[in-house]
Amino acid sequence: MNYLKKHKLFTICYTILVILSISLVIFTYHNHSFYKETIAKITSTQEEYISTDTITYGYHEDIYMQTIKAIILNGSDKGQTIIINNEYHQGEAYDQKYQVGDEIFVSLNKKNNRIKNAHIEGYKRDKYIVILIVSFILVIVLVGQLKGFLSIISVLLNIIIFNCLIYINTKGISLPLLSFIGAIIFTLICLTLVSGFNKKTLAAIISSIVGLSVTMLITLIVIHFSQYNGIRFEQMELLTRPYEGIFISEIILGGLGAIMDISISISSSLNELIEKDNHISLKALSKSGINIGKDIMSTMINVLFFTYICTIIPNLTIYFRNGIEISNLISEYISLEMTRALTGAIGITLTIPIAISITLLLYKRRLKQ
Image (cartoon, rainbow, N blue to C red; front, side):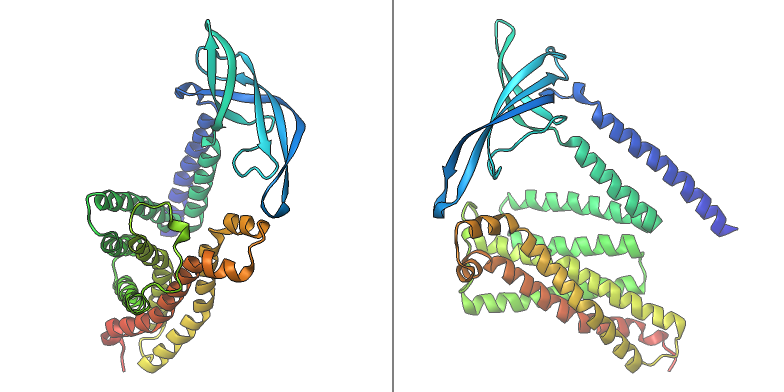
């Protein structure tokens, strides 16, 4: 009966959430009057070939001109039809091609209160963002129920705290120090909200902090002796702050998620084994923890690797098009991503024995030998 009541309550709450989500999506499709910027919807397009641009290493790119007809959706000019000329390159690196049905922000040039010409400022993307956020929330809550909802709360809290840390950094506080403090706070919030405050959560929190600390210590030792040899910072050349602090902060926060995942996976698994059989030996638990760690280690390292590498796919495409050799590409352009991925892999690997040791230490008294 208790289960039925909980299921009924969840069904009612989830139905309300779905209704609110659909209402929010509908609102974003009709919220043009809430914008100060002029919004127009494209009703027709025509395009013609202009010329071919020759880029580095003989690569050719066609240039086109679009004649766009659009209707204004808000403001004092609502309902008027405007004609816009849009020039774009085939690769769409710095400009883009627009389609019928797209909603765009436009700037209007007027003369004697009549529209002389218009220029496209960019897409109106809010409805796509809202659909994505709503889909994320509905799926997370449907699968995780209360824990899914708490996961969303933890993400929102972490975003707020992250922005606060960045603001504090503008006052002159060390960014790596703030990142490490932030990592501890993120760990506490995320694991406590999702798993509750209990022994397995405590074991995961301690394991994450110790694993991250050991990883950072090894990284700093290596950096100290190597003096950043082999690491190229060309991708950060536009930054006005020292590269090293930002690089170290990226390592701290980039590997935190994987380290937390390893910690909670191992502590939860060992906790479940103890719940099933509190006569299980420390040796058997340790062996089970190592086997669990081996199973998730490879996948987590690959997740970390692809997470870092995918961020530079656009740059890689440009580099390959410009004939840069793979050896130069690895040494000069993706050394940062490789360093972050390898450092994260070290953290994941070290966290496995750390999490096993801390979990067994906390649960030792519960075991009946």
